[in-house]
Amino acid sequence: MSDPNFNVLLYSDGSLHSFSAAVYTARLMQNMPYMHLTVVQVQEHVLGSEYRWIDTWPISPNSAWMKKILEEADEETKKEYSDILKKTQAVFLKKGLEINYQMLIAKATISETADAIIDYAVKNSFNLIIMGTRGLTDLKGLIFGSVAHTMLNRSPIPVLLIKKLPQELIDTYERAAGIGNG
Image (tube, rainbow, N blue to C red; front, top):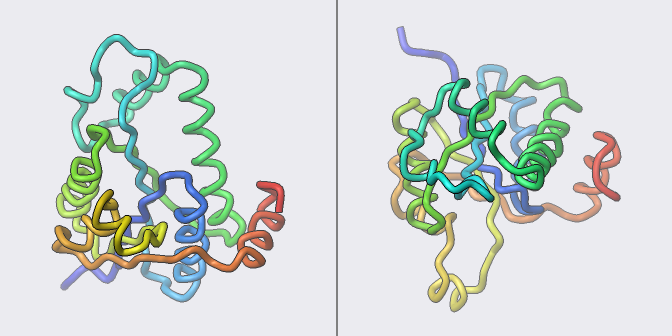
């Protein structure tokens, strides 16, 4: 018998666009009882560290690795990571939804970030990848590229892109969750 669970990966970079994707995903989860969600962040490297963890940390680190990295991170990195997690988690807690978190490490390029997400998603049998999109114009997108565009072109797993939601809806979610200035 096949697995009835629908495993979804939500990529979050802490931007307003990824927050829109989190709000949309929370609404989607309410209508899909078999949906299991993992929020994934990609960290370029641990700031202030002499040692290059980026070159040795596996795509799927275990909790001991994560604990060691966060213990060695500077306070600014710890606060940034914590703030992103709290804001995203609040969206799901507000609705009573359970989620998992995973941090991936990749070099600071669009290509490496997309490859890390895709590799993790494939190895862990995800059915869908959801992410926010900044909606760069065609010219800017061609010149600078984007993680979303790269994901669409490379991922063997369907990718759902979420444009920025109306500000009123975002403000409502932030007020209800007790976050932000909305």
